[in-house]
Image 1 (cartoon, rainbow, N blue to C red):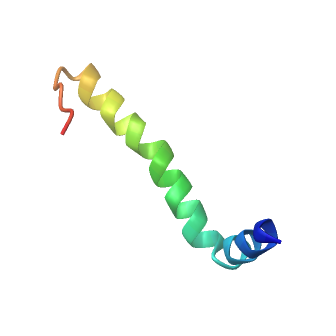
Image 2 (image 1 turned 45 degrees about the vertical axis):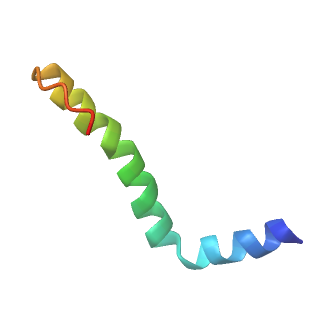
Length: 43
């Protein structure tokens, strides 16, 4: 029952969910870029 309640809003807000996932994927890439360029920013 609880899984169904979670699944329906996720499907309805698929673009928002995709944006969150792509942001979560992009964030480590940005950090890797900073580390590679010699900027050790953990804030």
